[in-house]
Structure formats: structure tokens, C-alpha cells
Image 1 (cartoon, helix red, strand yellow):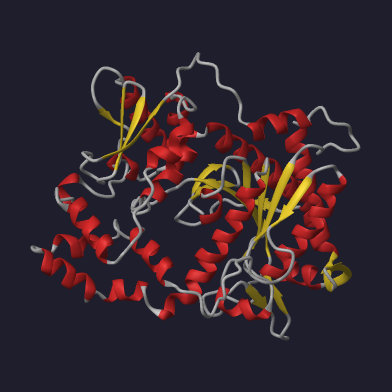
Image 2: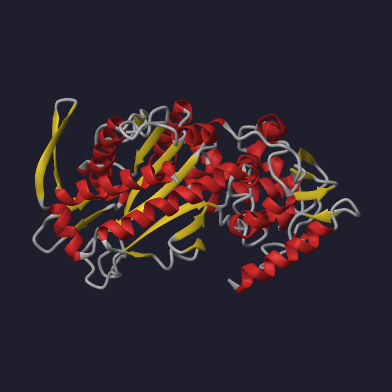
Length: 462
């Protein structure tokens, strides 16, 4: 918290100079790169390499960011920046002057324009976005249908059939051979919650209504080259890429060094097929479904583990049961490589309604889990995350960072490799039928679904 406080003070100094002189948007607390480490020709050489490997030219940012004008204020930026960009990587492609944010394509050089967006004056009227208006209107609903008029998307994480347990690694076993698949329990909770929310008047989308992947691509035969090229675009600020760029003194040497690079060849290797399907194709399909549904509230449902080093898929008697939520943020220094990555960052940075309501929704959900299920709020969430408030962390997670504006909560409900919890969830006493298939489930998962329902209700009412 001391580092965040110091960073916030530096932000205030920077923004107080707006309109007087050209000033950078960010002041670094931890320096990811320096301009002396980025030769002037790095941008040109990067474009050559991307073109050489047929990476698709990215859409101009101004087109997709034009609706963000006058949404955010200086004060709003100061509030959210420490959680969005703790390592100040965005100072190498953003600048601010005269209450406008200027984006650049050439990371670290700031000579190739990409977009510009106006900031809002404090006294300037801002019309709330549609999703926020819907949430506010729902406060006037009757007690019998308190969620009438709201569209709620539920995304049960991972897949739930045995075929995908091993490649995802999202399962736990005990010494007797009992297995819990996270994809399965996420699915059950989402289906139980869907019924709860529909009974309260909401229109509900669940991204998967079976145990299979959401993506319709054939997992074993899809052409992976498209995903490899995207991966290449998003690797241009990684040390291996910059090293190859900066060590090449001619075009011939540049092409030759990349073509011989084991790191680059691995991006296009068949060994990446499973990763591209699980971490890109399937997540992209979920994002597309949710964005086309245009929800007011989105809940991404996961369960957590604290892995044992000797066997990550086994029970862990040393787990301290806890719950936590995530909001978008905590971008790493090398997560600004592509225009798309930067556009996602800018959209969340400037859409103050979405970030704040996501924080509020997460708070109500984890508070309900803490109170109803008797678990603690997590005190940490790994080195890639920053605590925003007790139990809620900012992190650059793939799905929420790419969703259109709404109230978005990514909740790790409970640790399911905690032994007592494992057997509570495994005690299958009920069944549900979906599309001709019967799915057994425990009273514990019903409790989790009811708790999430109550968290959403409290958020909407209060």
C-alpha cells in the first residue's frame, strides 16, 4: 500500500501540470523499459517482422475507441491507474496534454500517432451507460421480481468432461480415486444460479449448457497459425523478441535470427495446439457470446486450489479456506505489445462506470460468500495481482479484460482441494436434467449458487 500511495502522489504531480506543458501520463514506480533500451528503429523492425510472418494488420485504434471521449476525468484516472498499471508500462505508449490522452504505436518513442481521446471536465454532465441505467431502474422493481429488466451473463469456467480434465489440469483427486472436476462444479453452480435468477425476473445467458468446450472449432484439427500470429503480435515486448530485434544489424540478419529462433518456432508448433484451444479459441467463443448478449451484469464462476508441489491435483490439508474476486487491471510491463492489448487497457481505464460497478458487484458477492458460507476473504492472489480492497484484486485476466462495458465479477468461490470442502462438494444428493442429460450435484453447490444469487440481489438493491 505504501508503493501505491507514493505512485498516487506522483500521478497527482503529473496531472497538476496538464495544460501547462507536455507531460507523460504515468510516472514509474517500477521501470519496465527505458527509452534508451528502445532504439529508434525498433518500431520499424517490429512491423517488418510481423509482416514477414504474415501477422494481420491490426485495426486502427481510433475507430474502436471513439466512444470513450469525455467519459473519464483526471481524478478518475488517478484513482484507478495504480490498480490498472502498477508497473507504469503504459507511459511508453500514452501521453497527456490539455486534457487529452494521446496514444502512440511506437512503444517508447511516441512519434507514430495511434489515437487521441478527450478527458471530461469535473463539472461536465455525463450520461450513465445503458447497463448502469438498467441496474438503477431495477431498484424500483417489486419484491417478487426484483431482477426484472436485467440481462445477466454467467460464464462457468473451464470444461467439465474427462477429456479436458488432464489438458486443463483443473481437477482434484483423493487417495481413493474420487475426482472433482472444476469445470463440472462451475457448470452446476451456473445452472442452479440461472434458475434462481430467472425466477427473480432476469434474462440469463449461460455460456455453456453442457460439459464440452464453448468453441465450435475442432480441437484436434483447427488451423493454429491464426492463433500463433496473434501470439507473435502479443510477444513484441517480451525480452526474447526485443533481444532478437536489437541484436540484428541488417534486414537479412533480422529475418534470419527470427526464423532460427526456437522461441518463435515454438509459437507455430503443433505442441501449442492445446494451449491455443483452451486459452484462446474457447475463451474467445465465451467472450463473443457474452458481448453479443449485451448483459448488464456478468459473473464468471470459478473455484480455486492451493496446489501441493508434489501433486498439484491432490487434496491439500494446509489450505486456508477463502474467497476472492477480481477486477480488470494489474497489467504487466510486456502486456502492451499489440494494439488490441492496449485498446482493452484504455477501454477499462476510461470507462469509469464499468470498473467501479464491477468492484461494487465483486464486493457484494464475496461478502455474501464470507457471511453465508463462513469463509475468510483471501489476503493475497499471487504476484500478478494487486489488492484493491479486502478480498478483491486487480488482474489482467483474459475474459473480463475483453468484455464490453457492464458490471463484471470474476469470483473464485472456494478452495475445492481443501479436504472438508472436497467431500462436501462430492456428496451428490440431488440431480438436474439438462437437454436429456442427468447431472448429480451436492447441497454444497446449491448453497454456493444461492449465495451468489443473494450477492447479486444485494448489489442491485443497494
